[in-house]
Structure formats: structure tokens, C-alpha cells
Figure 1: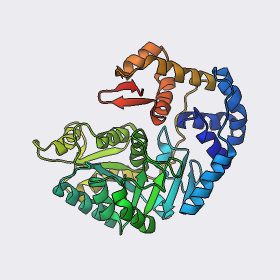
Figure 2: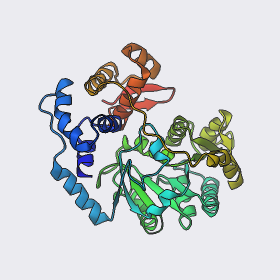
Figure 3: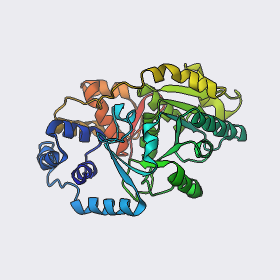
Length: 356
């Protein structure tokens, strides 16, 4: 585990690169040994891997917080999450690990949710747990908070943007502690890490990735909830939405999703009915994350080439791929790593911009 964490925490090793290194070298120890030479081939001199002391400090913090490790190819890592192309190689977890073996439904929505929206989220969450599902959300204000409260007695998982031991927002400290006792908290980031804006899109892909479907309860036309819905579609998950009044901005995102084909949700029965075809194939064996066949030094060079072409002004992803004259299968994993590292941001309409 120490070697895996050292590899993952090393500079310029993102999710896609980590999986590729493990696939190519077989073990984290072998990948660590090769990493300086790979960096040198890519034009990076004096490369240093993550010091072992840093990892031991993280492990010590995990023991103090009562956190358990979840490694990508080792149970009880979530089976559905393992199927996505950018599956986290490692997660920290605090709470009831048995929840990871049950089918999960994600529920997200507006932070400034209306009273009707929070009541709907809480009721849906409660009834979904009564039907045997675990409700997953992001511990944010509004809909997330209501969903966790509704599902607390039956099974809920909170996916955190920072370290699993760092509660954000602070007002949900008691809820987070209740989830520790009766549910589960998981996080991809290192122990003790304060969440930053760039961590939330990464968190959102985990929320949708662990679930069989995502239910959106109130969301503006441009919101993090719609990013989660987009992730869900990219991951092959079912997207469902609660409709709202056309003049309520908090319902605009949900109404757009329904217009574009999302399942309309009026009650828990609509959610369960939409899940029936998914549940029939629930026992399929998960596959490993998709890998680019590009050599690792070339992946590193592509990383720099993409950054050199992007600036603060948005550029369409399709245009970038054309400009790079490289297959989309080579570029996509690098874009994921750059986004998770906070080097680029994705905007509405398939636009990319460099963070400066």
C-alpha cells in the first residue's frame, strides 16, 4: 500500500497515468523505479518521487481518524466505481464499509434548495433506503444535506471533496459525525487536505461513479449538479430529475435534463421503475479502466503540449483534438488528469480553459 500511495502522490502522476504505470510495470514498486527515467525521457530532469515519509505521515493520520484504505483492485472497493474510465486508484473511508456492497443511488441538487426541494430529497432518500438502496451524496448544503438526513437510518454515503477527515461545510460537522457512526464517508484526496474549488468536479465523478443512477432534485441551468449528471451520462449511468416550475431558476437544470431525455421523477416508484433494467445486469463483471496505448513519455509530452495550446480563453475540446492531430483516445485520459490536477477547467458546451 505504501508504494501505491507513493506512486499516486508523486508529481505529474494523475489517475490515468497511475493506471497505465500499473498496467505496464505490474507493481507499484516497479513503476516507482521506472518513474525517474520516464520523466527524463519526457524532458523533466531531477525528478523526485513522493518521499516515503510523506506517506507514513498520511497513514498515521488515517489511523488517528479511524480511516480504512480502499484500493482499486481490492475488495471492498465499490464495484460500479471500478468500471469508470478514471476510477480513483485509492480512497479513504470512515464508517460502515458493508454499505459498499449494496446497490447505490446518487442524489444531488441545489445548495440553495427550496423547502419543497429539501422535503422531496429527504423523502426520496428515506424511501430509497427502505427499498434497499444506499443513498450517496456530497455533504453539501441544501439537497445533499436533506438526502443524507433522509437516508441516515437506512444507509448513506458522503463523498467528500477534500480529505475524509476534513468536513466541509463546517455547519455539517454533526451530520458528518452521524454519518461516521451510521453510514460511510469516503474521499479520494489525501488525509487532512482542505477542499479547493478544483476538487469538487473530481468529487462529483465519484458520486456518480459509485451509483447505478443519479437523481437531481433542483439544479440551476449551470451548476455542479449538472456536472454530476454529465459525468453520469459519460459513465453510462441513468439520469433522473424532479421537475419544477418553469419560472423557478432552481428547477431550470432539472427541466433541461428531462427535456433531453432524463427520467422524470415524481416519487420513489419512478426511480425504482427506471432502475429495473439496470438491476437485471447488476451482476456483470466490472472491467478495468480504459487505457491509452500511448507510451508513457509521449503521454507526458502530450500533457505539456495541451497546456501550451490552452489559455484562459475557452477552446472547444473538438477543436483542441483537431489541433493536436492525435487520436481522441490518447488525449482524453490526459485531459482527465489535467482537470483533476486543477490545470484546466471544463465549461458548458464542451469548452476547455487553462487555469492561470
